[in-house]
Structures are given as C-alpha cells and as structure tokens.
Length: 387
Image 1 (tube, one colour):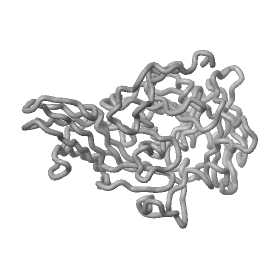
Image 2: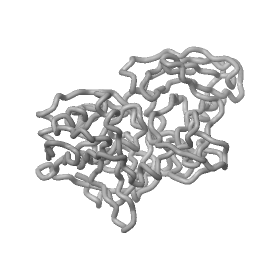
Image 3: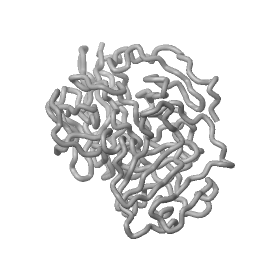
Image 4: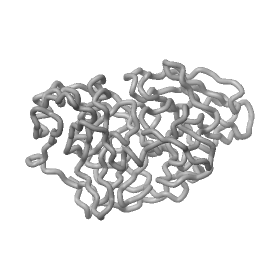
C-alpha cells in the first residue's frame, strides 16, 4: 500500500548533466523505490538511471514507472480484489490472487519491459510526448500463470477473436479514455509466455509496477503490459478503443519510420521490440587516463529472438570488436556484455555498441523518425575524455 502523503520529494540533480535528455531533471524517491529520475509526477513517470543497466536483472526498487492516467491505485485490498474473466467465454470467472496461484501451473520467464517511447528525448526533430532518456526499460524474472491456461479454464466460445485488458487505474476526467489494450486470440493461445504475473524477481509486484497482478507480453513493448489487471474480456470483434485504434501506432513501413516532418499515410499498432544495446558504464563524459584499460559494460536485447553478438567500437565505427557476452537468461531477457579498450593517447574518444540478434537483425547507424517518437534503436555512443 502506498500512502499518498509519502509521495514525491526531489532529492537533488541526477548527476547526468552531460546528457542533454536528463539535464535539470531531479532524482525522486517514491514508496518501494530507490532514487529514480523524475519525468512527471501526475501521473508518476520515473526513469531508471543508466548505471543499473550494467546487470541483466533490474532491481524492483530501480524499475521504471509509467502511467497514462491519474489518480493511480495506491492500495489494493486482496480480500476484495478479483480478476474478472468475461465476454465470449462459457464460464465467466472471478479469480482471487490465491486462485491464480493455486489453480494454474506457475511458470517463470525473464523478459524486458520497455516503454515504446524510450529515448524519445533524442529524436531530431523533436516530437511530442514524454521526453524519456534511455531508462524507460527494465528486465525481471516474472512469476505467473499462463494467460492461455486462464482462457481455457473459462472456455472460449467459437467466435472469440480478441481479448481486452483493463486495470484499476481509471480516468478521473470526463472524456479521457480508459487505458484498455487488446491482443488477438492467436497471439495468446500460440505463446505460453504471455502471462498474468504476480511476482517480479521473486517478490510481490511493487505497487507502482502493477500490484497485485499485471499482464506480461514478452518481446512486445510495454504498452500491452497492463498494470493492476482487473478485467479480461473476450470479444467476437476487433476492439476499436482509443489506445489501440488511435494511440501507440507507427507508420506502416518496413522500419516503422518515415522522413522527419512527414505524415504517415497508413499506421499500424506498435508490437515487437527492435534489437537494441546500451553502454551503461563508463558514464558519458567520464575522464580516464591514457594507456590504461577501461572496462565497458552494458546490456543488449531484442523482441524475442535473442542476442547472438555484441560489437564495440572506440573509433567512431571504423572498426568493431566482439564483446564478451554474459549468461543467456532467455530470448526475452537483457543479455549482459562487457569489453575493454585502452586509449593510446589523450583526447576525446567516442565509444559505440551494436547488437545483433539470432536472426541477423542489427541496429542502424542512422536513427529512424516517426511522429510519435517510438522504437528508437540507433547505435548509441558515449564519449570519454582521456587525459
């Protein structure tokens, strides 16, 4: 439970003044959370500092927070909370948290949860929306019941086509659309890793990450990962709610991008994440001595094929060297990588990292652009001042 009076309170600058996306943004501490970077407070949007991405698992306390509506749930009574399963089913159900844990096989999956607009602040020209740096993402081990098992228990009727998901966060103002998302029946029934999760990293979900249960859709952007899940409704038609038909859509092009400033002629819903990698250490602008080894660390991930290679460059991409990969926790997980470079002489060095998936997808050297600021996955760089 999160008492409202304990919320907020800036604790100082982020220490990332060299990153244009983060300049002037304070660190704040909310219940169950470490110091995170503040984007907005109503609703709370909190970004994970880059240093946490040296490791494959993001601590619950450091996991980013993203809401669309305000006010948000701050407490849930498990004695009365139920997950309602209704619509085109033979046996509508009201499941308690204990029902989810005891009536269905428990499974676990490591999966990255990444906001579609992660790194939106780096789009040129700028676009509207939350100006995230690179920390609107995290990776955890999720404990859960398979969604298809829940639907099978309810009994799908022959005409079932889509399933919608709604949470406890509801709009306070008239005319604001409730945050409801939808998945095709086939997406659910063909994938045992689409789940209803009640734990992350072996602990109950933090309130700000969806307590007591949330939808987890591995490999897809977190717009589908509905928090505080309370309603699952099976439909015999395509859902046309705002957050599917109008929002979270990208140009219908092979890359999901168009020329800057252009308007797409046709759009499609955003779904699978693109391959990406991050340099988490050293920090951008770090000063290091010449002729001494510098250890580089970070993570790489994609939309569910898995990472096969990570390459690092210290000469603006003229040459690339293979990085050492960490343990493989599964195809939806962050994959740790590390490398070493030894700057030969003083000056400014630009370090770049590029990941390759098991199906050969890699990161572009030039960034894509779209009007919503989604899916940025360009090869990123940090610079070192060698003295």
